[in-house]
Each structure stands twice: as structure tokens, then as C-alpha cells.
Picture 1 (tube, rainbow, N blue to C red):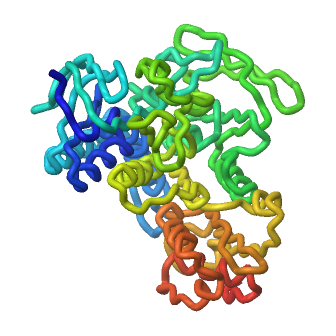
Picture 2: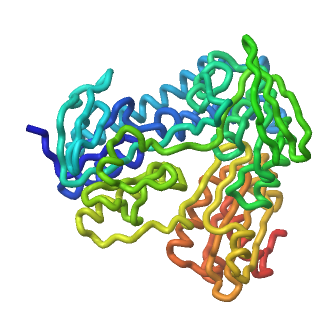
Picture 3: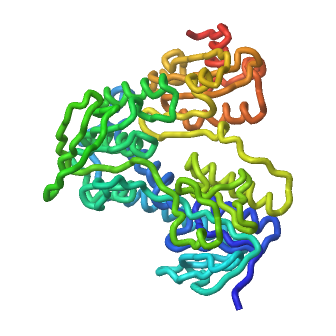
Length: 471
């Protein structure tokens, strides 16, 4: 007899474990199937360990610039192995925490690879290194099964990662030593974060982006400011350029790049990172046999996690962009609460913030200025520079911009875009404002504390209406 549950979640990443915990809170008998690591890519090989690496790079940067703060530091250096070890320790701590939370909420962990055998039924093939008290392989069933299997790095034909010379983010997070030179293919969040980390640590970094703009999903003005900062740091950037192929050597490779004018360039580097996006893990689950609709590599859902097959749901990266951990978590909650019969509504993807933790940081939510105009909106745009903010100057971080986009007729906040120090910690203020349908008048009347970086958010709103004070 198969072990029976109310809800089984396939995948223990941010979307999966959050969905499972919420399901248990709502009284469902719940299990999570995971084959390799609780916390998924985010906690183990993505969001968290990269931030630990970037923190080490940030501190190293400040040590190098100690004189700027009236301080002195001698014989500055780093131990690459120790930097990586700290990053892995942070991940391990949080993954252990996920196991604790699942156990606390009485969610069973089934360790292995799940495949649908029929609607509501799974066969789990046991995996290695199961955590304590986890269930193993066997037959399991549930009235509701949520697929949260995440995504993996996309590989381009002829430029597939080999884990030695051509890295994915997996290898980029655990270098045995710092390469002297590195080419990053792709300038989205993953590519730029690694480019920023390695450049700060002294590596000669070249970024190649096929589109005319780096950070393609960001506001053009914000991306242009970020690019200038990156280039000032010594990063080489080729936009509108394509990697045509590679020639591998014993411990290096030559990357053949065609620029935006059709000119060929051969760039020899020690290592290359392929950061050209991710692709959903839809294979090997038995979804096709069930008739689950898959479109362009992702599972089609109705916005509440439901697929076209009753009892089968999908959340997170596997359910489509934006492929962000916080989006997956929220989808998991919406999906489970829908199953419970609570009042839910599809997530508004325009109100999902995006953050890139490079130096300088980038954060955004809603429509860019260009997208708002393309949508036919009459807009007012506010800008406030970091150089006009006392806290930014005191921090030694005078470079950056806060930009807001409003509907000129209604005062609706359509979007907010930032580049500069700590903006990833500021963007949530605008996210809340958008969710509460706050107008410019209410934002202008809000009192922001002084001295803080958040004052720039206030000034940017006022600037959109010709009322900025400090610029």
C-alpha cells in the first residue's frame, strides 16, 4: 500500500518547502520529496551563498579603501578557500534550518526522485545521503501534488559548460583558486553578480551580452549608470556582442566573440562563466503521460498554481518567470490556500521586486519608463541622485540614483528603479506602496527618517511633481 497524504510537494526549494509548511499550518497531512538538498538551488547554490561571497568581496573592497575613511590597513589580502568555506557554511546552516522547520511543522521528508505513475500517485526512487528521519523510496499518493522542481542553467549548443574551463554558477561558487582572467557570457542578475564578485577580488573580467543593454530587464537609465560604474571598476563590457564559439586549451580557453559591428574578437581567459538563463526541470516527472500542458519548457498554470490536470499544481521557476525565490514562495502560499478554499487571487507579477546584488546594487519593481510609455501611459518621472543625500555621502557612497514613474493623471506609482548602495533593502518600501495603491500625494505626505538613504525615495517622488528640496 502506498503512503497517503493530502498534499505532496515535489521539490524542497523555497517554493516547495514554503508551500509544504503553509499546507501543514492549514491542517493538511503533507510531505516534501527532495533528491539532493533541502532549500533547493537558492539556499545551496544560488541566492544565499552568492550573497555570502559578495559580502566577502564588499569587505575586501572597503579594506582596500580604508584611507577613504581615515583608517589604515596593511598587508590586505584574502584566502580564496576560506571565502568559499564561509559561503558554504552559511548555506549549510540555512539548509539545516529548513529541515528543522519542516520537522517542527510535522512535514514528512521523502528522500528521492519522484515520478508520476498516474494521477495522484508517485513512485519515488531513493537518493543517496538522506537526512535523519527522512523516508526513502517507494509508492506514495496524495489528492493534491504540487510540482516545484525549479530550474537549471541553460546551455548553448557548442558552448556547453564542462565544469573545468566553462563554468555554470555551481562551479563559479566554489573556485579552487581565483582565476587571473574570466569571461562572463550573459549580463542578467546571475552573470553580473559573479562578474562583480570576481572583479572586486582582482580578476580581469570581461562581460559579453548579446543585447544592446546590459541588465536587459532593468530600466535603461539605471542600467547605463550601472555600466559606467562597472567599467570604472575595470570591468570590460561588450554589449550587442555574441559568443560564436570557444577553443579550449590545457588550462585556458579562447572565446570567439563577434561585436555589434560584425568584427571578430578572440579573447583568451583562464575561465568562462555561462550565465545565459535557466530552463525548467520538467523532464522525467511523467507529466506528459498525465497530459499536463507544458509550454516553452514551463508548466502552464492558471495563476493560482492549478494546471490543466485536476490535482496537479506547479509553482516557482517551473511555472514560469520571473524566476525568483520570493516569487516561488508567494506562489506556494497562494497555491495551498487555493486548495484549502481560502479567498486567493493570482499574483500581480508587476509588483514582484527584482534585486541584483552587485556593486553597485540594483533594485526595481513595476514598469520601466520605456515600458510605461509603450503601454500608452502619460507619465511623470522623478529622479534623485545619491550625491544629494547626507547619509550616502557619510557612507562614502555618493554614486547612484532613485527613479520613480507615476501615472500623470491618477498619481498611481507605476514603477521604481534604483542603483546604488543598499537599494535592495529599500525597494520593499515602493513594493508596499504599489500593493496599497498609494498615490504620489500620500507618499509626499509620508515622513521619512533623517538621515537615511530612504529619504531619496521621498525626494524622488517629490521630484516627479517638481517639489524636490535637495537637488
